[in-house]
Length: 618
Picture (cartoon, rainbow, N blue to C red):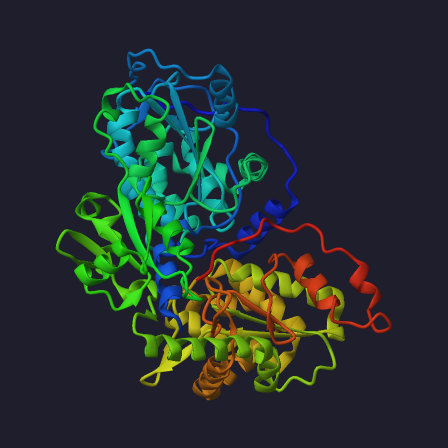
């Protein structure tokens, strides 16, 4: 099997943003820290169905766009992704594979000359767009790619191509390409994904040394930003595919998004080469029986079906209404109390998705059933209970009409100006772009609008609590201190620089340097530290209490309200904003709150130069 390297296309492409980042690295004389790779997290919700869909959907979230760089000439060796060993190239597997020449050419173009493993002329080309700090990308490389490699890459059936699509690990991508210069892309790629700490120059140099590379040449490559331009330019290929999340794949022209189970990739690959030996034992899709009630006002099964299919690819569904003879028999046979109910065959326990979701199932006499608490099954089967449920449901719908006004009361908002409240965690990679958008809007509209940041933090047994650790929560308090003590200009400068340079693991030793780099004075840094020391518990308690008193529309079920526990969450004039997250779209929503006479001229100025949107949440 061979790994081919991208030929040089010429250097010296201008990239002012990267040059500025490079200059900042040189001035600081230290590593440029990156955000930690987000790990899958579960988060409770006001509704059980919402919690279930959020849990089942975790493997689909991901991040944004960027890509690769100039590469040297071809090599006849390749690095084994699993063992790290190198061996000579393998041949295309024998077989009369009927691959559309147009698809083959399109995949060759999409693969470009990026790093790949497998036979160059394999009948199936699989291009991954990935991010080194995406937890789900790491899951794919740890759990799924080894099986694809064993069954399809090593047998000459699949050419697997790696390309970058990221926002938070651009420097890691550049470092991997500098290792690629020395023929060690895949080894270096594996080290980055295995790294659990922060990524920065010191780490990149250590990896180079560990692999026996010429560290001086590696450092020169990295510091020069040699591969920055192509990291940016390759993102156009990802955008052209419509991708905005990682990992995303194109397999002989078919798109697959998310760190899905091996079976999903197996089915897709085998659809092009069904006569190949690895495809002879592909299991047929399983059928899930869904018992529901047409009279239930809140029994939409589409969300659970969609996420179930993502974990158990190829699944088909048989819908049975409880009023039918079969429905009544199923209620009796499985002793059902609430609907909808999802009944799975025993084969579900033999799938790779089972290991992630087994805790959400209970055993039945002939298979498994998703627990009521996992899917939010709340529609009772008794008539009296249904009447009570319907009454509560109508009350919830009534609250949807007034929750925005109630939120403004909680916030103490005067209503004199259009108002944006946004809720984030300091080091949530999906929430950080909300800070950037808010900063741009403030820079354009200033005090004509109200922009109020909130942090999803809490006190538990007197200790700071935040999803990504105590350091994240502490930084949220420090940022609120900066806003309270020094105003929005200082606040946004501080927040954006901290987002760029620090992460939840190193923030306690990083934030002061980031503040200095943001232009804060020594007195301002000391003032933030003093505010934190004196008031962190009070600020945290107030922030937590305010968040708990607010309501937002449940992202999974628009008929429900929940507290703003997802980063990011947006309220405009007290009501949930569900539009695009870029600064221009949020600005337009805010400007819609002005009367024609009061509308600032700045509302007519477009906020351009947006990065690709992040669609996930923490």
